[in-house]
Length: 155
Image (cartoon, rainbow, N blue to C red; front, top):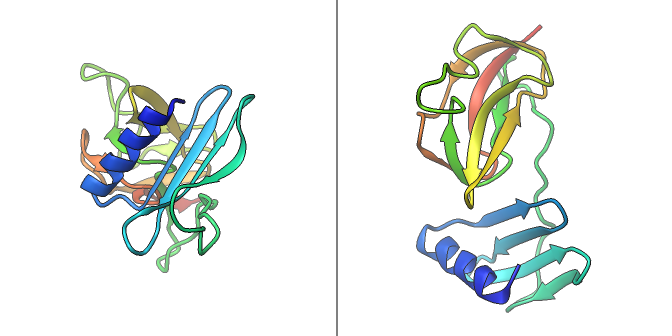
């Protein structure tokens, strides 16, 4: 990824009040996290050319948040959360049926949605076994990192 692309992502993050951004492609990974003052705090890019964090302004004050395994909510339901920032789609195309609706039984490998990030369609798997009880995001709406997408009653 080129520096101009990273700068464009940082500008997009500032413009849309996004605090974290992560992109993983075949041979590279980049993670951006904004500091408390709104400035970018760290860029990390792993690939065959670069090796580790590159400070942009201030050092990172807290460890970067990793997507956690789905956790049970107070009601005993598990939330399937977005592992990235992007646009949420419930089906592979507008003419296709939704991957998952309320009442759909899922297992850890079941694809429940797609999130488009930087023109790349990323399949989102349930990572749990159970039944979908709620769909929390409308089709075609933007989602944030860690935002709940579905609720699942474990089985």
